[in-house]
Amino acid sequence: MELTYKIFTDTTTDLTPEWMTENNVGWLEHGIVIDGKEIKDDFGKTVPHKEFYQRLRGGLMPTTTQVDIPTFTNAYEQALQQGLDVIYIGFSSKLSGTFNTSLMVAQELMEKYPGRRVISFDTAAAGIGQGMIVMEAARLQQQGMSLDELVDEALPRLKKTICHFFTVDDLNHLYRGGRLSRSSAFLGTLMGIKPVMYVSDEGKLEPLSKVRGRRQAIAELARLAKEHVTNPQDQIIYICHADCQEDADELARLVKEQMTPKGVDIRFLTPIIGNHSGPGTLAVFGFGNSRL
Image 1 (cartoon, rainbow, N blue to C red):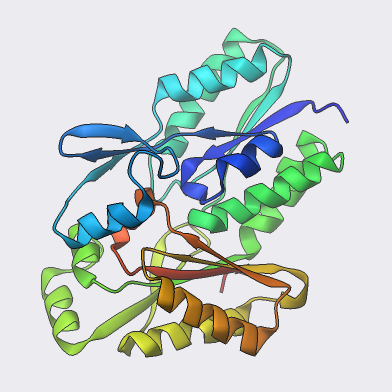
Image 2: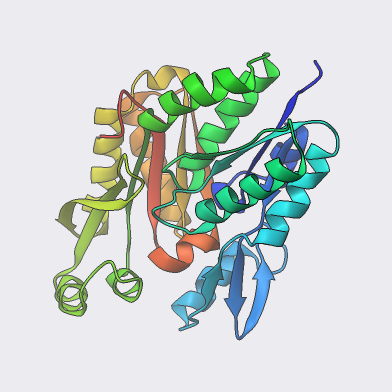
């Protein structure tokens, strides 16, 4: 089937370059600055994910960069010059300025290429939560769904029903990111408090509960997944971790035991997100009736 539009997304989705190439999805690279040098997100080729998180534990304090205008423009123009429309299925605008950049580029290119459509869709999602929306969009495109149907019907439905639940191991990373006060981070660390959070309908990180200890946090993630994810037998449940494989395995065990899903897929959390949440971040994702 000949495609009439090209899907683009971010490298923050935890999708693999192999999957995106096979499914004709273009990717836009965020960046990370380590020791004053910017490294484009190349799926861990330059700095393997495990090495990155080990360096964070050792005191490394990198910063992240958004997808810039030239990256958007160069990628889009390749599609537009082939006579294709473009849709960017993007990282939450509440967590990154990248989406707003995409809107500026879209306006400029529609003026340059009259008759072509350049659309930005804010998933209000992050990580593989965003990636799951992209995977479903690509599947629907391959089944013949038009761009209008995707934008007006499918993507809004997927956006409302993707569930993300996560916990962090080190509260100081949330403090440095401005999401926790210094005193809360200090007292929480002293008392062994582990926050459990979710990504809201607006695409913001919001607190759900606080538990004592890591094992309780893992159990709470499994409970939330069981409570909010619907028809698990028909979908793959995704788990992402920031270099805490044993905890991810334990969460997968609980999910399989309590939900009997179609499958469980465990992946490393992209450093673009993990840099802000810290080593030991653990998250579970699935589709439900609503985000919460």
